[in-house]
Amino acid sequence: MIDKQKLADMALEKGATNAKVIEVAKLKIADEFRKLCENNDCRRYNTNWMCPPAFGDMDEARARIAGYQQGLVIQRIHELIDSYDFEGMEAGHKLFNQVFVGMIKDMKSMGFEAMLPLGAGGCSRCESCTYPDEPCRFPDEATASVEGYGINVMALMKEADFPYEFSAGKVYYTGMLLYKEIGE
Image (cartoon, rainbow, N blue to C red; front, side, top):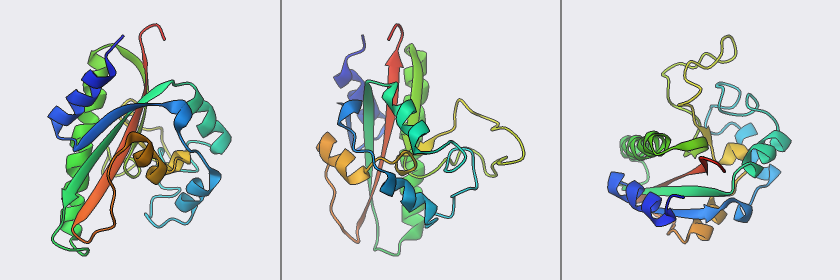
């Protein structure tokens, strides 16, 4: 069994601001967070395999989540010039994804059999998704969003004891790798 603190430390070494393993049973899952996806504020709803409605309804999402006992929560805080620093937001998201994808690769090489990667926003693996015409090109590298699975990100950060403040000078990217180890 892999030490939980070791996983968190690995994420910190990769550039995460905060990282912690939490029990999946403590997640706050609610349909209203999926409805945020349906509002399409991020403009990804019904555009890729890893966003709703492509990966199923909330019952399917809950069933997938229930197959895991724990998850590594990863947060990266990125400084911005101001609340209109869109380039800074994109740069911060890119850095978060580097940490997140790096942890997926490392955990797979350590023997984790199954993972459900829930990142900050929908999948951005490909410049252009094949949805809905062809299957996903990289199903082992694709990541869904935390909110797409109905998880309350604010409650997730609170459960992990991560900071969050509304500030024009910072952006907070948070994701979670639900995982199983060999034999689990």
